[in-house]
Length: 117
Length: 113
Image: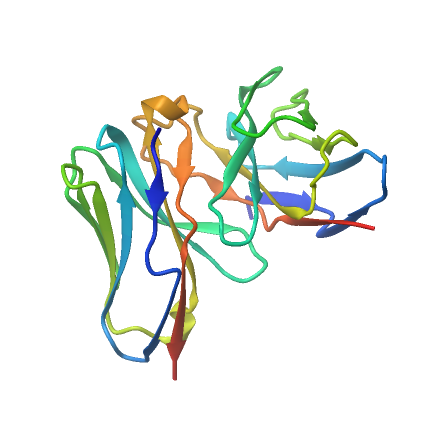
């Protein structure tokens, strides 16, 4: 079955440590996204990539980094510069990065919950 | 700047009732509006996508309407079932978000058997 796989499901970060969240899709989608979800708030966009080897900052990119070397993979690194990393992180993909006129919705993984040790 | 609001934050109704979830947005210049469902600790599942030129979309017991001029969308759920219990989120695609989605915080729905 096609879908998006996020790993790990739970992750703990120590002070000063960088951690990387994995996101892999086998839907042959061009675009991929990382969102952060905090209690009582809507999803906030961290980074997105509309095509391989290209990505753009979202609304809250500070303290995060990404790469898009393969179509299937879009890992997110939470750096030590991100002072409040505790949240639920969601990866998504869409057939095209043109969301204006697309009738294809985003598909989501099951998320990674990151906590501070 | 576009803002998306979902009120109430939580809703509890008896099984079998028809119900309406609300989504409002401040800028009517949207390209589309989407409704998603999220089960606890899980990712989101797309329910309905309405283009700006459309007034409503239907899928099974779900019907979503869009009134751009008033900045409102509603998600109607007919004959609710305990399995409908989840958080329902709406999101809009607008130019001022660089054509990315702007999300509401969601409505947590509990259907009591």
